[in-house]
Amino acid sequence: MSKSIKRVQAAAEAAELSIEIKRMGESTRTAEEAARQCGCTVAQIVKSLIFQGEESDKLYLFLVSGDRQLDIAKASALVGDALKRADPRHIRDVTGFAIGGVSPLGQPDDVARYGDQRLLDFEIVWAAAGAHDAVFSAEPERLFKAAGVEKADIST
Image 1 (cartoon, helix red, strand yellow):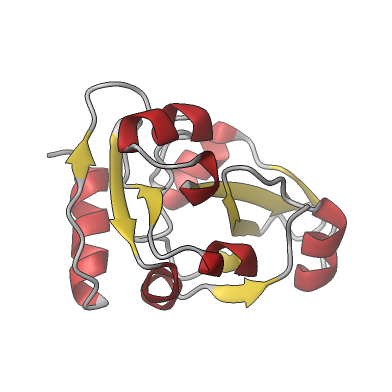
Image 2: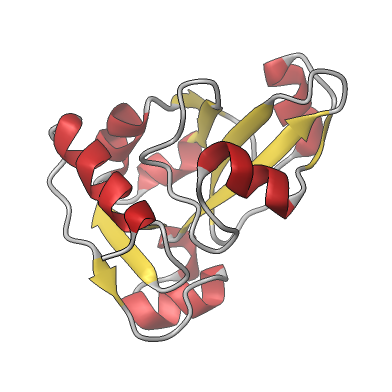
């Protein structure tokens, strides 16, 4: 088991969130790939999107349903900083996760986390577990709590 996956499992255990990490054998990097692998709708896939403050350089994690887009204007207003896409190397250096495997769980304390309230419409959602082919399912409310996510209206 990779270091990143172990970190996700440890974070879940520390938050008393019972998860089973599944290695799918094929890529789950995109919401569409993940939905096929997980046998769910694209909307049930949690996209973990990391953006960077243009002035602060701070990283922000936004959890958005697989069938929606992050509304940059809403997200920028929420965090009080203009946002830009973060460089993949910077994301890996700060979070320890590579693009395609960024998990809501196991994030460093200095990465602020926000979750789109539309994810709460589902009984179960699927999120990345630290590798391009690793996922886990959870009840969205429990996932948000375990990940330290602030609920917000951030998608279109």
